[in-house]
Length: 234
Image (cartoon, rainbow, N blue to C red; front, side, top):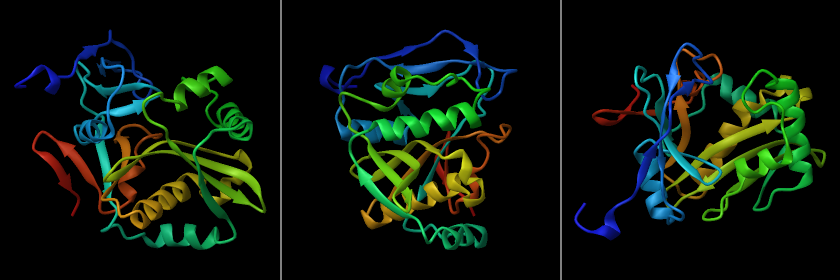
């Protein structure tokens, strides 16, 4: 770039076993900046980066390109018949947006990880792990609460940018399996993004070969980041 103020520093991690495709070695590009502004953050999202805590990263694996950055153009999004049923079946629920995490949020997160992801990299959960994962000194996420009769049953952690929302992580009560809570929280985030006049909802990475990460193409139309830029599904 033309001047020092236009440059950013990026480092690379060592390789390690991939959490989603254990037969593969994962490696990450990691932004080496203490603070960034929201405009740069959104630009990096459009280049395939993601946020976890204060770390902005992008897969740069030596022998694998399975991670596909995916986003929904929310103004064009139309729920499928199945997604409409999910919305209909959850009309008794309410949602609200808060800016601060709470003990109530963490208790739900703890239940979710212990019962739904005890075989994953986030087990066992701890408050320190949760805070490090959620909180960011240079950007405050939104927390979308889903409640049933005032009882908290789901939380979606979302970054709000000038032209988009970015879905960071969602967790919900393990007793609510019949509600399709994971799908519902993506649909709620699509609705909020549209109400806010945003262009996109970023969903992170689609991994076709991973059972835990291959559901995102159900939200159509979607866009995948390729070597030729963002390509929209037919």
